[in-house]
Length: 191
Image (cartoon, rainbow, N blue to C red; front, side, top):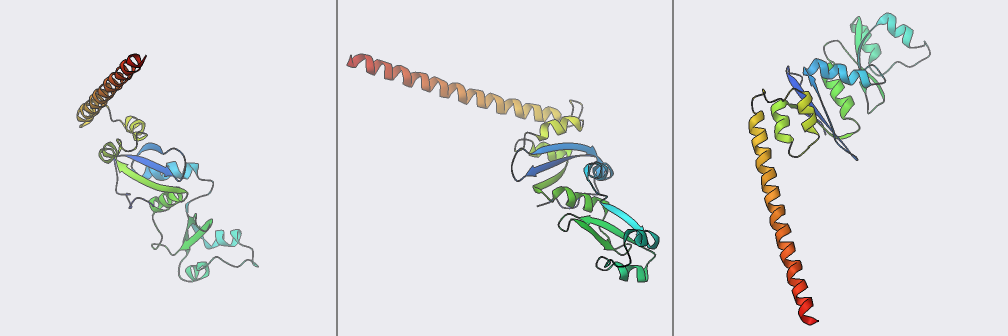
């Protein structure tokens, strides 16, 4: 499950990775280009690349079968675009202009082994922070400081939630103490 294409994002973004098991991870970067660079930096393979006929000859031995469609692409174009496909654990080749964007390839690569991947604006991340506390650190690294619009409202909301939780805990503790005292009195009367 992946986020719809968000390569139009030009500002600070928060990336939420939700694994099948274990803790979620959130991190931030500035826009789609930085997202692609961060994903590519951690990938063991090149995710999006251009290949010309000379490089194709260098990559494949004469007895090798060319990847699907590559011969046809070079029959009509002087180069092809290779995109790593994690479901195939290898490259898929496209005619120039028909390939997915670098952002889409990076997004699919990152999402492949996750239960879900979400790419959020800072505003969206604030909305998700109550459900995924790990986003809070990513918001801070994204620059969600007291000078950021909406930050004070977030603090007030969190303070109100904290006060409500403390009030409920105190009431619960008070009720528990009253119950214990009533049990003690009942036990003492039986003695």
